[in-house]
Image 1 (cartoon, rainbow, N blue to C red):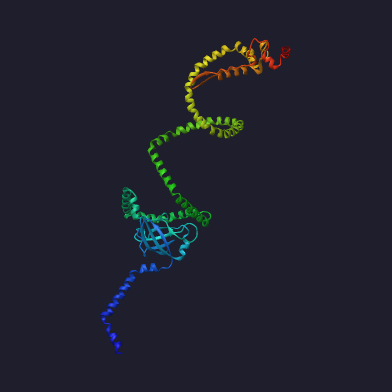
Image 2 (cartoon, rainbow, N blue to C red):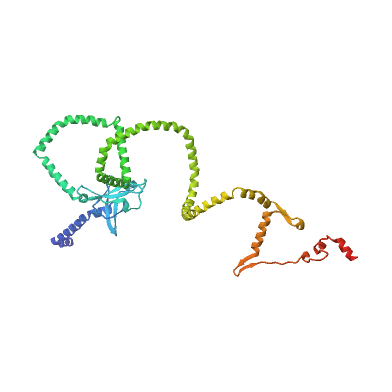
Length: 435
């Protein structure tokens, strides 16, 4: 009993105060780190998202939403070069709903900004998402001051002036006019109700759904073709500027348009009879046109192959132009020569000369055994060919071939011809000599 009493007396008021302060500090530290502890201890899956910058996302404070519902919290934000990696902790079923290619964007909680949250957008095929959402599928918010800076200074000044004018419009006179408008609006709204009822269509339940679906499809197509739309808007701006520059010409055309339309009417009246004649002429021409179409189809590959030849002929024709110029006087002289040759000269050439050249030659008298069965023009050609071969030319100069030979008939003045003796023509003479 004495020991317990001493232990109790050992805890003085100062010590109790220190213990209380320590516990208070621990509790304060836990309360200060409540968000971080809650984010670390939160169950679920971790998803990494890459942005160009974090844009005021706060660790363990900024929420993560999917279709407007809180599904997680930002766990960490790390900057690495030009890319900021945001790690979020989401519920387990969120990963299954994101799809294979989700996207993300940072959005302001209010119109004026201040607090921001991270929104996940499902995309791709159905299935659980695994991986990192890259930078090309993430978006940063557009600040209101950034939108205002995009407008020219005159536009911003116009907004201020318009706001001031609106304030002046809502003074005592403006309030009186608004009261009058409100008093007359019920009768106007009755007519508006009839108009809106007509706009609902014959089947309001189905037409409205179809209209919404069609609007969604149109917005999807427009968002996917934003590059073409931008080009279209640029082209429209260019067209508008050109029309503005040519407004005086357009005004002149508008003034002369009535007279032009009258002349066009007269021309169309005259063309009426021409078109009737053309219609009557078109029936006989149709078969020829069909054949012409076939001809053009067949001529297409021929023209394709002839195109390089025609391209090469241009240089040939340019080079041949001086030659053609020189041939003109020659052609005139040649015409005179042909007229002189025509008549007796051609008759003689076509008659005895060609006849003699086309027939074989056989010798008579001392040349009885000479000749051949070949025509004379061939023998003449052989003769000139042998003469050309006899006269040769090389690097040393020209030379003439001479080939002498000896035969049985080379010895003259003998009573007996050796050629006849060898051929057996004088066998009786040989018997007399033997005797």
